[in-house]
Length: 517
Length: 82
Image 1 (tube, each protein chain N blue to C red):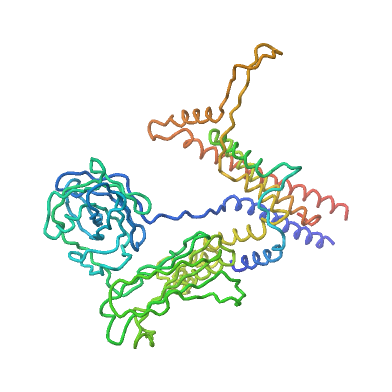
Image 2: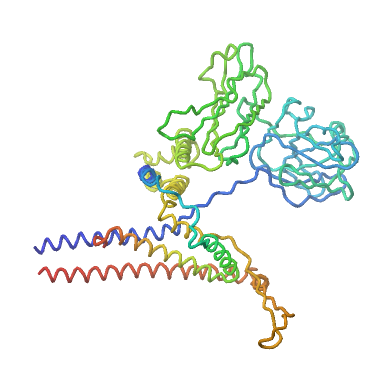
């Protein structure tokens, strides 16, 4: 009997420990895991400063292209004069402050403009100058490939454009409606500001382009979230090297949409449709395709671009050709679905597993579980720790499918409201003053209090007080300390409450044991 | 991770017939949802100035969640709750 009581006590104690650990972990992990959508980065960042401008020096606007661009749409306003303009994009390698200095140039001179458009000039950058650049590109190809990197742009007139080869001095930028030679042009967003300069002969470009047959880019971009009410346009940019084109051989392009917006177990709806199917290139150079707009329903999608070596007019494809390539971009229209996210995450993980070459890919991490190259920490991490994307998707799926349902959905909604960060301006209070108590004379004086204004003014005053040495405000100094104290207080309270529970349970067990005896 | 996804899909399948809650209901003609949103808006405005209050509010939300979980477990497990 005593052993039976002992076993029961051990079982109950085990349950108590499991219960305590579960509640503690849920509460703490629930506060630690907060998933927010990652913000999309812009592809074009423009600094707000310009280089110094002196005669004979190149000045321009430094900017960064974060991901490989296919084409820039340029629209500029110009009052007076002609619309012949060119934008020269240079590699960012300026070391001298006021002269050309060491300038390695990647010259993309974009086409001259169209006719004056109601006092302004509108350009679509559509061609690359062929005389100086080692790129020999078609002047009629729409959409230009510009690799990611740092650049700066110099705007100049068409005279200088022509004069680059021979050298024309004293060219000016006639693009400002009034001095001082400052213009602003919008390249999609944001705007590009620059100053003019006199120009000398430009040095020869030193950048060596990639001239291998390859898929350069295709759209929509990987991870894009597109609006549901706008048609989706698919595009593909590729480059074909001359040596890959011959009498009987060519290069085939295929762009097709693989719809993942279906149930995982359903095969009822055809999900693939080809946008550009088996186009055979018989000449080398840049290739750019753009489809019409397709209206897609909400959900998750995948677009795949393929390039392959073809023979005999595209009837035969060489499966072993080194130029064969297949790339996928996954995107979402409107809201994603839980199952769609599962499928997309699964696809990404499989791609990483089989194609990963970087140190952090799943394939390399899995190697840490190999007995001959055993690394305990990496192996355990690979086996037990899910990726952030997986956890995020699972938590969001749980929230959408379970936690927002009646009746506990009301608690979730209250919790969501409590977690909002939006502010509302405090209302203004007005007090009407009457003359004398009980006076019936209409009030002629009004006192108004604007707490919002008072708070704002007070905050600005307090925030202006900064530490002399480090320049930190009172908030920046005290906020982490108060946060730490509150966090410790909350954790201590929860642990104490759980221990109190345990103490009550033990007292209850002792009473039961005594009663049994 | 696979098991977690299976559990989530199973739970989703069980509860999918329940209606989703977008906003809180009106009580006796009074829009509780917009009232709460406005109250939180005012509170957040005050918290911008008095940030210790914001930290205390966040801590109270954590404690609120702890008590909800504790009450839920006691309700579900009944006399078996440790």
